[in-house]
Length: 494
Image (cartoon, rainbow, N blue to C red; front, side, top):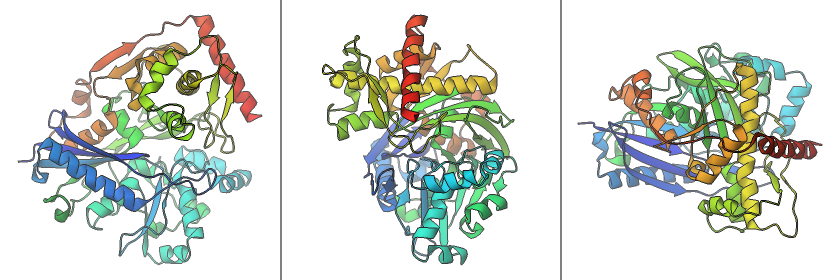
């Protein structure tokens, strides 16, 4: 009898698999990091084979730890790093090049040329996105133009394109299913979020052949079954959503006006706007929050490229901290008289600035600056960037002063960071009991399709809060600190 659900959470730095019971309680998990490749300045790549092996290994580990056999899994939900691009051979399933990661900036010149040619408006009108190398479309075109013979093979129908969810579905089903969901499709610069279809005009502008595109489905749908040889039984794949949309679902943000922010490698805030796509006047993104039963729900999104990645940089690049979890305690003990600001534009600036050429900077360094002040600056940068997003969303949505932010992701385990976030935002910050809401959202979608779990409204009533962080900082101190941040941004962009 199928009594459990499996979530595959394929992230930017690691792959995870979690087995949930029908009450969405975690029963076993596996996690494995994989290598990051930086072949040139601003370029970031992953090896699709390493990703695939990590997914298989963590899935087997999760099943083993949960003491659950594959036959007991009612459905698999997949959630993924969204804009990362893979193109592979339909016969062999092998990628023609390493995956180009969402953080990669190699197509900045292409995006600039398109904007200079006046193409920006048509992309924004149809996709809700901005012309930026962050998104998948220009990465696809780069692969077709720069891998020998790729364009001719693509036009001949020999190659397949997909974001990581699509690549995993192909591999899991033994090449039987080439599909994605509406949330991942909405991040490609190739998909019209109003008509819910791949757009011929956009495909023509970027010179991407329709033959390589996957079928677009609901987030809860039939995505085939896994090859029996992989896990010992054929498991239905029944839920798919990009990581930030999956977190929105896991946070039960089903009502218009509800907002969540996920703090992982980057930071991504989504505001549910219901069945109406709200055009942004403040350089946010209009995107598909989720699609169920053929009905799209939309969101405003703000994307920050570097959040937890700044802490990783302190650990792996500068080697001034031993472990990421140490940063909260270090920040707490930092010298309050020092005013050190880190603008972590390592791969450009995301919303609401969208400057692909910007690079990181540290302001306010003194001879007395230590790892404590650098840790504090890295964590505070996340809080200031979130306020940038929140203010832009409030202007677009028309609401102000009544926002409660639901948070998730690895950084939210730090009480110091979450309290600082509430202080800088001047808004309550709610941390849920289940921090891994991305995997939870994927598992919910699989369970919904499998008939194990209730409709969204009932699922929302089961959401539970671990802790609320309320603002404590005095208004003049808050505004003074944020003013220095805005000044740092101005100096960087100048």
